[in-house]
Picture 1: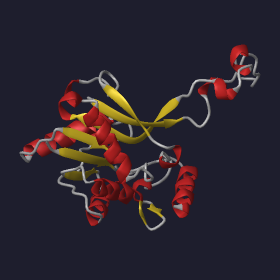
Picture 2: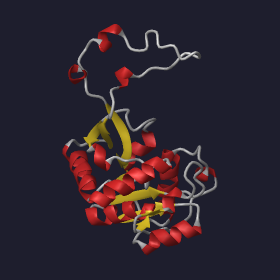
Picture 3: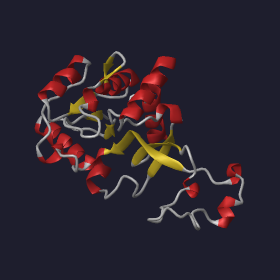
Length: 228
């Protein structure tokens, strides 16, 4: 049964220009996901889905394949990840190749390791899952969060019950960290969301869960890498 890794790396990011190929210490950002995928040893194909020949050349330099470029519809910042994945699977079908599972590795998660990927697949196999999605513990409880009124008054910002409860007694919340999405290929075509049925959480450490979207995130990832 064959496993496919897809690393989606479109050009034209707005908040952090060309972030997917921006140098993070000694190599471009997308290279970290390619290398982790290779080192995990679980994939038959590792492909970078991009709309840019420049990005494709960088991906190939680090060991990924780019058998075709992404279409225009799936190259906008509003495009669905799952429509993109279906486009990739259709592309491989035209090359007479199919897969049992698909793993999406966002290039914006450079601290995700090969061991994280292997452990995600171990959970996927052990649970007979339709999907596995990586999460990490939230840095701050969402129970301490709320919207603000226009005048910034905080009346009722936190409920009395929560305000009087020691933080260590509050429930633990997790967030999707964007580092790892593993799905059965057959499930992908029938689902409305990966979380519909038979989806399991793979817990990652917060330190491996940096998701780069801003300059601050980039600086944080650089600092953590410098300490490894």
